[in-house]
Each structure stands twice: as structure tokens, then as C-alpha cells.
Image (cartoon, rainbow over all chains, first blue to last red; front, side, top):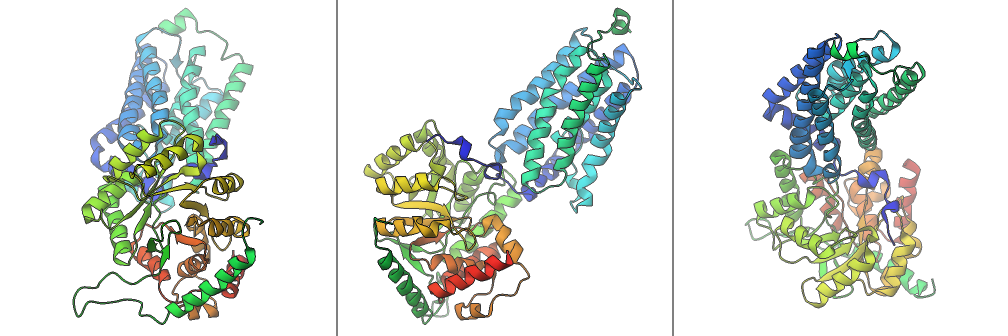
Length: 235
Length: 314
């Protein structure tokens, strides 16, 4: 009688929305300097991502790496792990994402951020706008307190959404390495929010499908397979 | 239904209802002479394997007690347990699957100094080292010995059930049980009930989810297995749906103030049911739930009425 097949999604829900959103309240009030710093760092990275430039490219990767490292320790380890026994299984993915970003920053790999003027870029910008401005405050519309806002840089949902945006804004085949972790998180989070009866689950799930569509579009248009020229890499 | 006498079971059902009505003649609460209130007199039920009596309402911890390290919420949980004990409750149920709930219960018992009050009920939920998990669970509760340990959702039952029986034989555990929920794997549970000398089973049962009435509850009664009822309010959705609806007229004879109490009376009036374990985050609800174990209980006819009314409203 072995047995995991007998569990439904509802069985694996362990906490209430009240407790889940209190995590953000406690983190935002306890670590407010770090939370605001991470949010501002994300804003700087998003501004740089709109431009083309070698130095800016490296700064973006460093900032995003630090953000993923902080989120792994701050939210996941300190706050989420005590109420969700699945976190230790998810945490290595977050650490891997931080390491990947650091490696991209350290090595001259063909990955460049910058506005391309195509549909994928536009959707990438849309994801960033959602991550920085819409998602954090959507809860307020549902009656949650502002102090419970999920901010890019510290809360995993908007950070994963934003990361998808950054990746869609990038060029070069290596960028796809940065997609699995945020995509998996979006699916896990959508399932969690769905079971908690939170309508915003639709946003996370939609982001997954739109990203997959953009990947297909880039593949079709040859953007994915086109290697960056030496000049583009050095620029 | 070949292994037990259905007629005898139904007779017991009817006589239990009558006993419940007789119990209404006794005072609901007892007081010291002008001093602090004593533990209220609530209905107790027998654990068939030993005859030990425990209060007929317990306290679940799924979701509600998984509050992590949030001290404000931990203290709210302590208030819930305090209200539950003050109202006469004893059994608290948890699981390694419930996140931080075990730690929180341990914190609450420590805060309230109530380790000697609780009827401690937990589970083994692993396909790996069951003994290591039991040790960890005891550490989290800050308790030396559990009253009852159950194999959670039959996970790893071939390894964990013999382990629990061994602990019981060695005097390190008082009772052994097996749980399911949401009506799943009922056939597997029935097979275990037929083949093992269980003290307890835990199943989902409420006026809407009544599948266990057909076979499992009569079997438990026949085999002398105590029954803990989980999800008596369907995880809260049942009482939420009924909120605002007027109680049926016949409910006044049962001295209930709420749908929650009516549902709990429906459950504990079943002769095979030992103890439903509703979960709550509110001390007032914990006390309200316990009051379902006071006063008259419905007979079989009234139980059908309750299920009928609720079935129509859901």
C-alpha cells in the first residue's frame, strides 16, 4: 500500500491565507531595510535592462543574483519553511538560480539584456510592470493590509514574475537556463494559491503559459537559435 | 455486513439517543461553592478496548495551528487550547504533516502548563524511519509518551503499524490507530480493521459525507474500535455555507446555539463515534464546540432530520 497517489492537492495545503500573508507582514516589518533595498535594486536592474550595455548587463545579473540569494534565506528559509515542509525541496532551486545568475555575471557568456522592440520584449516589460507595480498591491484591493504587500526582491511570486520578464528581455540561447526555476515556482505558487481560494493564482498560471508561448515565438523567429555576434558580446 | 449483527447495532443507536436525552436532565455545568469554576461536565465516551472515558469532543490542528514562528499567532493558539480545556476538552490531534502545528501545540502546552491535561494524539506519516519520526514528534510536543499514535492515511502501514504495536507492548504507547480522510482508501482501512486489533480509527464523517455509516462505523462498533471523526465541518466550508441560515425548529430540543453544535451533536450521537476533532482559530468557537457535548443528543430519527436539512441547504 504505497500511497502518495492517494493525496489530493487539498490534502497538501497546510496553512491558511491568514497565516501565509502574515509571513509577508512579519518579514516586511522586521527586515524593512533589506526589503526596500531589494525592491530598489530590482528597479535599478529593470531600468538597466531597457538599455544595451556591457557594464549594465553585469550589474543586472549581480543584483538579481543577490536578490535570489536573499529570497532563499529570507523568505523561504526564515519564514516559509516553518509552515511548509516542502520548502527544503524547493530551496535548492532558488539557490541554483542565484548561482546561475552569479556565473553569468562572472563569465563572458552570451547573454544580453536590452529592449528588442518585438512582442517578446514587450511581454517581458509587461511582466516587470506586473511584478513591481501590480502584483504587490493586488492584495490591498482584496482587503489585505498594505504592510502585507508582496514586494519584488523579497517575496517569491513577484520576483519569479519579474525574473520571467528579465529573461524574455534578454538575448542569447543561454537565457533559457534562467527560466526553469521561476517557471516551476509559478506553477507551485499557482497551485498553492488555488487551493487557498486566492484568485490571483490565475496570474501565476497565465505567466507560465505566456512565457512558453514567447519561447515558441522566439524559436520560430530565430531569436533563440541566433548566437550573439562577438561585437554584441563585447558591446 | 456478515461479521456483526446489524439489528443489534441499530438497537444500540436508538438506545444511545435515549440515553442522550436522559443526560439532559443533569446540570450542564458544575461550580465550586462560590469559588472558581470547575471543569464542566461534558459527555464522555468509552474507548472500547480499555473502557477509559474521554470527552466526546476533541480539537484538531490541521491548518489552524500551523502558524510557524509568529508569536502573536502562537499565543492565539494558546488561547484556543486554554478555552478548549476550560470547557472540558482533552484530546488534541496533530500530525508530522501539519507543518509547525506540533511545535505550536508544544509551545501552547508549555505556556499553559497543561501537559498533564491533554489526551495527546498524533500520527506517523512516513515511508521511512517511523521511530525517528515519533521521537521528533515527541520532542516537538515536549512530551514523553503519547496516548495515541496513528498511521496517517495508511502511509507505510506495513512498517509503521507493527512499530506502534511494539511500542504499545513495551508500555511506551497507550493506544494504536489508523487514519484516513476525505473518504479515501476506505476499503483498505476496513481490511486493516478486520485483521488488526486497533484501538482507534480516524475517518471523515459529517452530515454530508456519510459513506462511513454504511459499513465502517458498524464494523468499528462491532470490533470495539474507537472512532475519531475528522473534517466534521468539511474543513470549515460546511459551517461557512450554513452561516446565516436559521436553525431548524427541532434543534431547540437539543439546546444548540449554532450549526456547528448541531453537526457535532449529530456526530457524537452515533454510538460508534467516540470523538470528533473540529479545528478552530477562535477560543469562542472552541468553547462553543465543547458545549455540543452537553445536554440532549438527537435520536436516530432526529439525526436523519439533521442530515436532511443540511443536505438541502448545501
